[in-house]
Length: 219
Image (cartoon, rainbow, N blue to C red; front, side, top):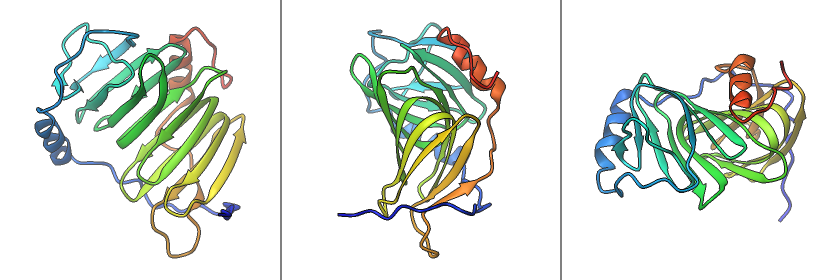
């Protein structure tokens, strides 16, 4: 089946909806049936942890780890950085994340909230939200997710974006931030449209690259 490629000439200023504290409390309370906090295998190098962090439904204790296969949930005032292998991440408040893979990360599912990430070269990764699938190739990205629209910035490198509802696709190559909204339902016929660069900085990208021994191409 052929897929229409959108040229993305304009952008929409509609904000990405952020989940409220009520949503966070509901998810945290409902996750008690999940497995207990597991022992570390191929565990993440935790950087800064500020605020509430839950892994697999349980409050993460000091010295806890994050690894492929885990589900991660952050609180209303949480900031977390961590690295797994050559990939490093920063989680925003009220973020619900599933890390796909066994020993190495194969992909990330961002259910709600925001994720900043830098990825090592040589292995492709996939990021999924309710409206978006993104194929990552050794790049830096920022994503915010809700059930109706996703915000995705290719900070540097190459990304293949696909709207999961309409199967519209866009290949993005950039050296300095190219952002898009990806809508799950549209009236205008455009599901991928240009967006402003918001809610992440070059300094944050440099912080993540430093965690895995690299220098950010943005300085």
